[in-house]
Amino acid sequence: MPAMPVTRRAFLGGLSTGALAGSLPASARVAGANRDVRVAVVGLRGQGRTHIARFAALEHVRVVALCDVDRDVLAAQRAAFEKRYGYAIDGHGDVREVLDRDDVDVVSTATPNHWHALIGVWAVDAGKDAYIEKPISHNVWEGRQLVRAARRARRLVQGGTQSRSFPGIRAAVQYVQEGRLGAIEWVHAICYKPRPPIGKVGLGRPPESVDYSLWCGPAPFEPLRRRELHYDWHWQWATGNGDLGNQGIHQMDVARWVLGAEGLPPRVVSIGGRVGYDDDGETPNTQLVFYDYAGAPIVFEVRGLPRSKEQQADRKAWERGMDRVHPGVSIGVTVHCAQGRMVIDTAGARAFDRDGAQVAEFTGEGDHYANFLAAVRARDPSLLHADVEETHLSSALCHLGGISHLLGEHATAREAGEVAALHPAFERCWHDLREHLACNGIDGARPVLVAGRTLQVDQVSELIHGDHAANALLTRPYRDPFVVPAVV
Image (cartoon, rainbow, N blue to C red; front, side, top):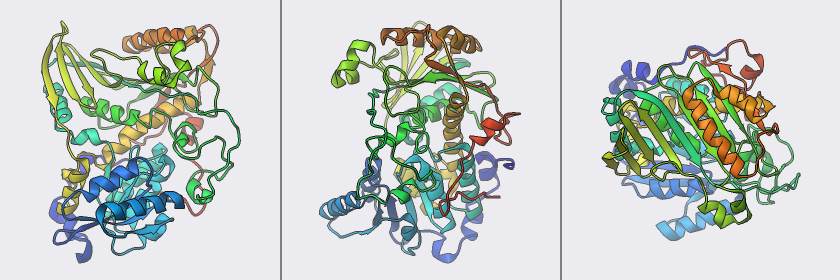
């Protein structure tokens, strides 16, 4: 059974910068204070290429190694790197080779979700600091092990929730927390992102350039059950967490941040499903999750379908046709307060009074990678904008929504509405979602959605009260040697 989690506040309150530095061997005490910080990037498709560019752009940082299990991707990125930066770079197919190198100070990873926590644990145990893409885990338990491993090794770990480094969003959060809009009543976080079907082919074939067993790593080594190995892993449970844990983790993190919630909520329940088409995907493309924090809950909403069924016929129309909430936001967070509301999206934030008039605006993007490197150089975890503890909690919220869904039962719209009656905000969002489904030709009289199981969460142990099946889904069976260790 997991022990009591160490909160970020407790950790930082009991740890001075000097204590941290003094605990490290001289060779690792201030990595790069008088020389370049040496970075290895693991996972080179999509976001991994951003990691390369952002770290390489920083002063006194040198990217020294690239790693990807797909040898074609690795070769292409090594060639692109040499062309852009003017020097040849080492390449590895196995992250363990990177961790064995003495000339690597930082491991930065943008692999699929099922690898995040294990790479993080391996990295800190090897004496490296780590930048881990969001979510930092594939399940709740392994995220907590990464937190413990980082504390035990006294290494710095930053999660890839970049909004934490945006000055505009930081200022907006402070504005709300100062009570400038009155007390928070509830928080509505949305991810309305176009998600067409991924096809229905059953068994696929991994690319010949990929070591498929190594790609699976901590996940079961089983036949590929979709057409594309890459990216579409998001929509199958063995490797991904749906849009709740893909795009949604960013908005989940902002929602929890603005509430000032330092732990998990006592109650979580989901309504959702994969509706509107039949494909090899498993995770919901339509979902509402209610997080019953004391005082002010979070309602998180995923919509992958467009505004109408007609728009599903054309991919461009699908992408243009996503629903929006005032003032024209399709991905963001609305903080409903007694005297107005704050709308936070990827570009910044705007505050509105009760009559809908805009009263403040907050803009400005920051550099999450630079923030991480500043903390690494100073050996000061309090400088991190997205410490591993923070990102673990936000990731865990996504995972709990998935668990509620997986343990739920198919329900009609009327039956799902009974679940939503838990809270007026939940009920309001459910009413709007029903209209959205109807516009996409989805018959609420048929049991196409899943009314999730209500999870009663122990905020100290991070277990589910009296629910063996739910607790089993807090973790997963691992296969040797890709085992996330229990850290005490």
